[in-house]
Image (cartoon, rainbow, N blue to C red):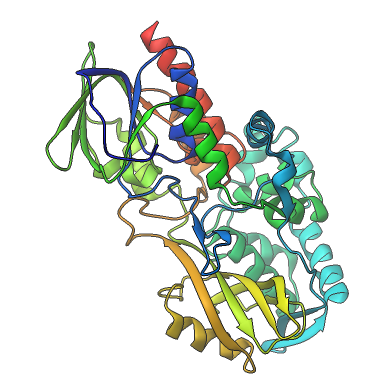
Amino acid sequence: MHSNEGLYEDTYDAVIIGAGFAGAIVARELTNRGLRTVILEARDRVGGRTWTIQTDDGEPLDIGGTFVHWTQPQFWAEVTRYGLTGDLVDSIETPPDWVLSPAGGGLDWRSAEQHGEIEKQLMERFFEPSWTVFPRPYDPLFARAEVAALDHMTVRDRIDQLDLAADDDAHLSSVLSAMSSNTAEETSYLSLLRWWALTGHTYEGLWSALSGYKLKHGTLPLLDAILSDSGTEVRLSSPVKGVASDETGVQVTLATGELVKGRVAVVATPSGIWPNLEFSPALSPERLEAARAGMQTPRGSKGVVVLKGEPRNIFVNGRPDDPINLLWTGKRISEDEQVAVFYCGPSMRDPADPVEIEVELTKLLPHVELGELHASLFGPTDEYSLGGWPMLKPGQLTRWEPYENFSKPEGRVVFATGDIASHWTSFIDGAIESGLRAARDVREILR
């Protein structure tokens, strides 16, 4: 299925750029209606910012997009369609007993129960306006005046309003920075407030949807099912250089110089890639300005590491400037060995570097040894993402209304990415939503 082999006829109905969930959904929706498509994927794998690998012992492991939930309607519909509802499992097999969190200018241990009580109270205060601002979170600007009044606000601005004790401030800013893969000073308050609203306006709902569940075989089986259902051609290691279009069709130019012709082009890449593609005619100034300003976190990373010498089930909530923001026990291998999941802050240069990770881990857990390590980094050095997960900056929601304005086609060029989804941005659900919308746009153009 995922190969570069095959014969290509002269013109496709749709040339799809990107083999993540958005691109795969577009391909399935079109081919199932009799249209002929091809997917051009720059990487040597499918998935984009979702990425399933195998550990040394053959166990599937997601080091890109991972966490899923039944409250995400587009995702759950796909899981139901392909009979994978039974594959949903707890992402944490062994709940933590102890939490290492900010205290006295450093970090100290407290019981998981005590930590949860403190965190719940802090988050309920932080997200208190959610019902007023996002009464219908799937329609972000339903309460436009209330949204506009807060759209300028950063996470740091909102925390400062609460006038917290120093340890509580560090606790809250650290966990929220880890959620957004960015600093509290740069993250939009409304971006996180929308998550809280989408998950039912509750602390328990937020953590359940954001990190409570995953697919036991990883995200790749679901993506493969969608691609197989489409029967489309997937050409790996085929980076695109440019897209030219007129009233009759499109020509997509690969980095090799090869031309791929179609009636419509679908750009199913992260939004940060848009300015790096040569479009003729040029994209709208507003779309380019937003893409250059960044509708993604500057970088997103997730890793999994085997820890030896830690008998407890733990959760680490580092300080805001720590290279490792969050770490928790995913599952136990033995009494003295565990698999831990971690997320990194901006000061971590390379989460896949065992030397750097060992240095930072032993600052937090001096007694542990580092075992097998797997990690990803989507950021400025990754030419095929140029950033992390979708996450709007302050002011972008009301200024650009990306989910509405940037979902619109420009001539015969259509756009599909979770970056411009209306609600579950930063999640697989948002990519699927955007893909469904893009497929409708293609069918309208070809009608």
